[in-house]
Image 1: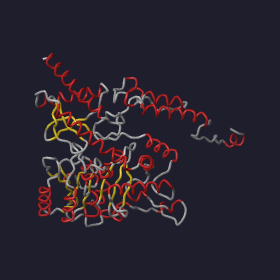
Image 2 (image 1 turned 30 degrees about the vertical axis):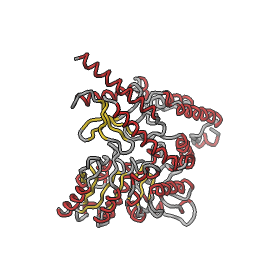
Image 3 (image 1 turned 120 degrees about the vertical axis):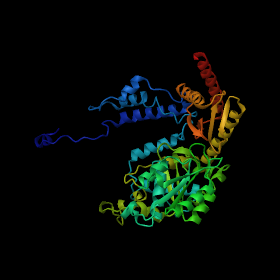
Length: 495
């Protein structure tokens, strides 16, 4: 502290920048080297493993008050976080419906964080790239260039964006000004009994309530029953409700079933309903040369939710909502306070991207998607989608060829539901398959999830991974049968 500061009582000014950038550069090179090694040998590591007690205790440590060296901080991250991942980048991670990331996208996230732009809007390059990635999503799905769209955190938020525009457009009043209580006739939204739980959350968040979402029965292939849907719409109109929106599935979570999107689009037009497509599982099948026909009609939707962090394999998190009517999209969310007014020149002369969603502060999600698409091209991502779908068919064939395994539902796209079946039923069969699933996880072999299809508990393999090979599926089948026999033998011995 110099004499002037000391006399005035001023404290020395500080910064978070390092005192020696050379040291940071050396460590940064080491981090990158470690990251490359981390991905290059991911196949040789366990998919998942339980954290030991000392690692769990590490995350209970109190708030640090004094500094530590960056090298020491990185060492702690390497020992704990990097050593005990969820596992979804591993080629044998097939639980739920994730995405396996890619190194170029990770570099994009790093660069986005270094640049530090806030994508709420404004006249800067990151804002233009954000819009470009949205435009690329429109092109991939066959949406018109005039459509609206926004990048969001993921599929749940993308669905909420689309359904919010649907509510406001079909309400018959200015919902933003008067609220949902002023809607003359209660709105009804429709989706199959297989729709994702985020749609219930959307109804609750929109002030409509869970009962506003009518679940329609599905056919044997778990697609929405069109006749039942028409009947429900007619019944609701007669009862004084206002049918507002039908939600089509471009891939259900349980089995990957795809509703007849063309028929739903025509029905929505005839009935004056908003047509929203939840495409978080399968919208991007539109770029897959062998399978694009499966989502024909998605280009007719009024809004679509999709997830670049799934079949574009972007690092978490990035979703996208597309809305055909860009004016309706902006009217649903735009607010212009005096401190965010546009100017004819300068930084505030660019578009305010927060006018298309709920977040005013928005991260630079576009760069990781942009870089990977530029490096590989959309056509390669389409081929990888076809590859995953072919792998699911291959796995289904292995299951059907093994007498101890049972295919619960034939795969539509890339989700395979099956179980080990040694002749048990009910809770005993569920307990056996659950134990197989847990041991596969605990032994680091593979990560599956489980669900219920047609009232039957089963194991679920969602192949949404560019690193998966057929040999991984061969291993899964061998280990499932081995564990099934092992657990059955243990039960016989204990009884």
